[in-house]
Image 1 (cartoon, one colour):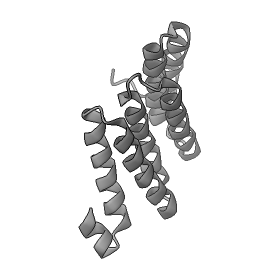
Image 2: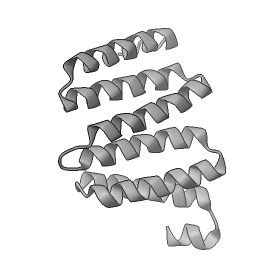
Image 3: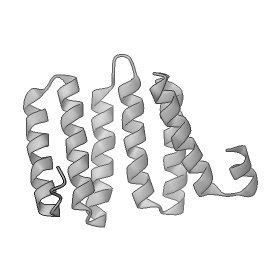
Length: 134
């Protein structure tokens, strides 16, 4: 990451930050995971990289879920932000993946009704996208 900063390679720096965030989330160290993913998000926003931003929102979601207890409300908000970007880009398949993630987060939060609704919407979006891989 230091090398990317020294070279001024912002995209590489952001990618390294996302990776670092994932490592911290896997270690259940939520605070640095959130910090690094938000730093990456700011860089990708500065660069106008919407697809990368949407992917990073997934990393932020994972970081919030790594907290003990998990911050499911904040995790769901990150997924909604990602889904909004995918809607802008017209990517139904990724929208469906986001709705699936919302379903998982809601299930984890204990709201079975919201989880079921989100998973049904994910199924419908997958069908719209022609994504029948499984």
